[in-house]
Every structure is written in structure tokens, then in C-alpha cells.
Image 1: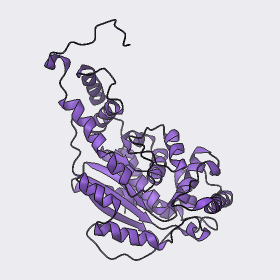
Image 2: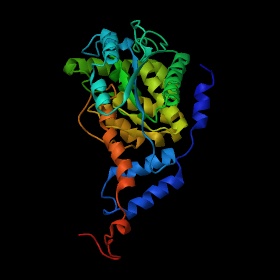
Image 3: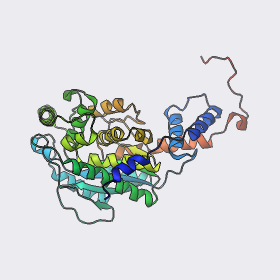
Length: 359
């Protein structure tokens, strides 16, 4: 990977296409419905037009990139599952047996896995990008999760894979994650970026119960006190208390923005990566679509920080890219309604009379 890949990618990110967005909004005003009646779909149609420069963007093929990495902080008893589950679930993804695979088949998406930090050596597979930066992060309560160089490498791995998927034809990217212990890293990132107390961003994760919740809060508090990550330096945050897969997700968000390819962000872990990307390159935020609001408390905090609105709220806390996939029909619906509904003049339907007030 080029030493300058991250900087070059950030430099390629430009603003949304204002002309295309205005055209989408103007058409929305002419469609046979009250203005704003389709809610988020109307905003989404304009955003997609701005991303791609087209009123009817081609959003297929679509690719889910599941970023995988282990976390040394699991030694602190912060998860209900052993770290071995990360590799076992990656094999499940590659075999097609996980929720992300079922939903991807349902919505005609491909699934690939990016290994940036799984502790176990994985067998080669056509759907596996083997780009391990290191086998697991360090235990953040004792030392930095990774070096700054490794943090940059994780972000650049995400850029490389996103670019490869786009070069292979993908016109819509979806982010997924797998890593036992990654809600701990996500909560730590959230606390630093937003200045929110740790107790307000830590959830029950994979079902750890109250004692586990206390251990998790304590582990994060100790890590933050030890490392004092700089809230204005996303790479400092990532290296000290983050995760390799979270860095890779940040890279995917940046690469999508640079290529003007929409990126649907999944749940809390993916949004932590997206938040780091937005801190690195504020213009990239406009190219992100938040698929859903996770049940993890840190997710709502991150969404408020980013000022981004999720499409769905289904009380999910699975990860993998499942929530991003479930938002796909809404993304398709936004494009279809903008382009296929008749205008008032086409349908010969009388428009709202000037000066009339809706009751």
C-alpha cells in the first residue's frame, strides 16, 4: 500500500453535486403527493442524486464488506463470548450461514470479508481479503490498542478493498463488522469523540449482564485514563482505544466518498468507523447513509454527534452489515419513487391551490 493512499483518498473527496440535488428537489415538488409526504425517502433521493450526479443512479451491483478483527481487551471479561468466536463467525460468513448472508441473498448483494486483525490464521477463500495488520489489538487497559502506523494501515486496508470492489463493478457499498470485544472499543471511541461519560455509552453488548457492564465501564475508564487519547486526532483515538476493523470501516467510508459511491453504514461499530472518517475528512459525511439505529446506547450518541438520521430503528444489535442490508429496500424506494411517480401535469391531477393551508 502507498504511504500516501490515505491522504490521496481524502484529497479526492468533493462536495455533493448541487445541481443534481436541486433537480431532485424540484421534481419532488411536482410529483403527485403533498410536498414532504414521503418523508426520509425524499431527502434520501436528493442525497443520492448529489452523491452520484444522477436522478436515477445505478445502485447495483452492491457489496457488503464485513471487516473482522479481534480485541485484546476481551481479557478484561468485557464480552459474553470468547475471542475464538470472531474467526468462527468469519468462517460462517464465508460458508454463507450467517444473518448477513441470508439478507444479502434476499436483497441481491455480495458478501466479502476483510481480515485486518483476526487472531486466528484463516484459510484462503475467494470471498476473503487477507490483509491482517496484526493478530488482534493489544489490551487497551495496559497498552495502546495498536501503533499509529498500524492504525493508518487498517484504514488504508479498507480503502484498498473498497476500491477493489468498486473496480469490480460495485455501485453501492455496505459496511459490516465482526470482532468480539468491538463494542468496548466503540464505546471508548464514542466517549472520546463526543465527550460523553463512559457509563452513558456502554451497553450490554452480547448479553454480559450488570457485572459485565461494570467491568466494561471500568476497562474503558482505565484505558482512557492511561492513554488520554486526543479527541481532535482520529488516528490517535483509533490507535489507543480502537479496533483494526473499525479503522478499515473508516477507510471504506472514505473510499466510497472519493469515488462518489454511496456507502450504507451499519450499526454502532460501523458508525464509530464512519465518525472517525468524518473527523479525518468532514466532506465524506455527506456520502454516508445510516442504515439503522442500533440498540447499543453509544450508537444514538454517535448519530447525534454526526447529525445523521438512520433509515430504520429495529432494535438490532447484531452487526455484520445486517441493518445496512435491511435498509436497502428503502434506498431503492427513494430512487424509484423519485423517478417513476407521475407529476401532477402528467397525471392531470390538480395541484394544491395557492394560499390554501393544510388542515
